[in-house]
Length: 204
Image 1 (cartoon, helix red, strand yellow):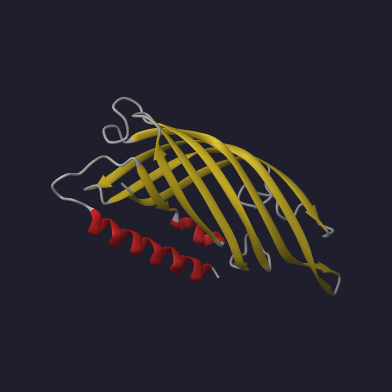
Image 2: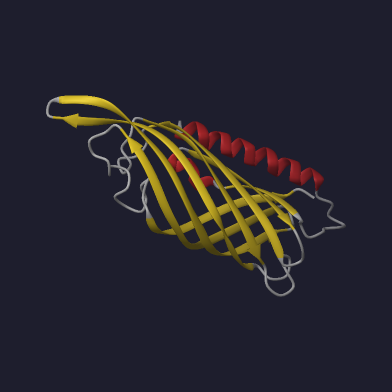
């Protein structure tokens, strides 16, 4: 499933790039006020995230970041049989000075909600049983990022920062802490380090 999501992301990105190349007017390039982006690293964790950014004023943007999760086991770190879920991140982004098209650095803050359903095996002596774990996780992120544009056709956003998470787990497994032991676990509560790349195109 991870490969299928990655292929879907690449196909969508290629189609968006083709559309942007057709629509760009080389004689008149306006700073973008709306951006559609893919976050490719989410494919590693069976996720697909597509962001929509729109400008409120010269210095202020809103970023809506929904993501979907679906697939089979793909990592030894979070050992599970299958996963499905969704998440929503909503950020307020501030660009100092002359704004997005003049100053590439930004500060972004906002809330996060995540929902996961995990099916996983649990070993009890010589018996292996299938278990179910449901996770609701809320939190907030503080990010610092840098935008880079290429002739207003492609927009690259490299960001880093810190997030705070609190998870509510419900499971029929004997080991209730299977998915909340480290900061990369789906059910982890605490502070996490964030690092990512977004690849987008302007819609205007």
